[in-house]
Image (cartoon, rainbow over all chains, first blue to last red; front, side, top):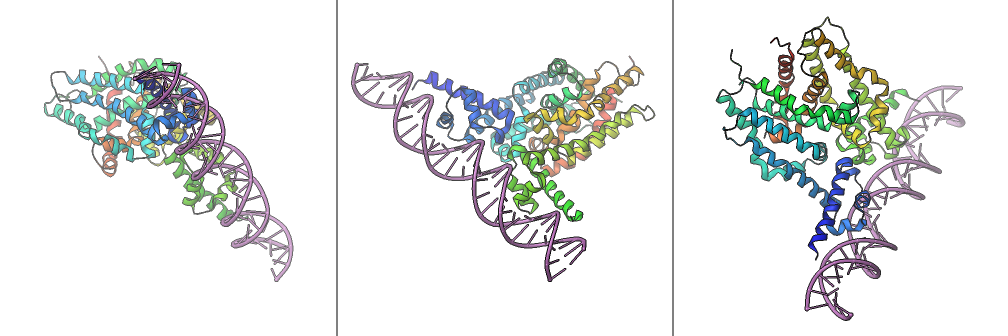
Length: 205
Length: 205
DNA sequence: TTTACTTTTAACAGAATTGTTAAAATACTA
DNA sequence: TAGTATTTTAACAATTCTGTTAAAAGTAAA
């Protein structure tokens, strides 16, 4: 077996599949379109991945695996200031989202909720690091303590995710081109970092 | 023709179609599932709506029509304080989202971007009311002027939309049941209203 | 009750799509 | 270079899904 070219064929297929699945979703994706895009015969998809379902799961898993490392931001070392941690997370998260469709994950989870539980089982523990970290910050009187950490979680993730997944709609609503919207969004991570920090800062009164 | 029952059959179909389209998307929806849910023969769907496509457009249009009135919040009367306007909008918006899937709209727009342009053409003018209103507030020195109104637009809409469309994922990440998440979210509109007001208030320095 | 019209159904046709298989092409090794 | 294993393709089988149609059932009105 030629590992070299075999890997590359598989990669070519996966890249094509990723594109098609991300824009069309599982149900809208066509094996034909994927093979066309990859420039190979349709039967070859089945040779490598057996079924559409299996191929999809591979794509889905990989997206999830790329995401999970971001959560290590919230490991509890208190060396680094929470402001820096937050800024770092926001930038990493938004960068991640630019190359990985969150909408894709979300859409497919809603189509088939089992995906969420089965695929993230092994990361289960990591998931509540955020809340633990922010609760700790409150205890230490480093941030305001009158907002439930779970709200903070929801707020930060919403501010990062939605502007990217909803880009088309926002650019249309704001009456600017998608390109202009992208440009506008280059300043966005900075802005929300600052706003969030300002908001969360410990308020003595 | 019996208008009574005819309307109600159509309504029954539309309700079923709405459910199926919203959870499965256009591509995942099956005419059979819709007719089963409506308790009628599949051919009847075609009798009333001709094609799946046409039926879908009806659902999509209606969702959009229900949404558009919310935008009138940003008509420029300066009688009502901007804080109240904002709070009112957030509550109305979140209430709207609870019964109308934003994810549905978004997913389908990405599948077929023409939907956005063609369907919102007639509402085009309303779309930038928000930005005009907030620019005005800045002029009048009622809110801080160092944040682009378009960012404010994006931030507010993200904070309202994403927690609802992403509910399943958030509840899973926070390790609470969907029911508990819903309960948690009852306090959410109040919280973000307050936070946003606090954030936007004119900052004398 | 008969007639005409509307609504609903069962059966079918046609198209699209996934997955299989056997053979052809290619690459590897002795 | 001959032989073997791997990769790729063309052709096909099976299923699923949409949309049509003709007939049946139901409704209203004369």
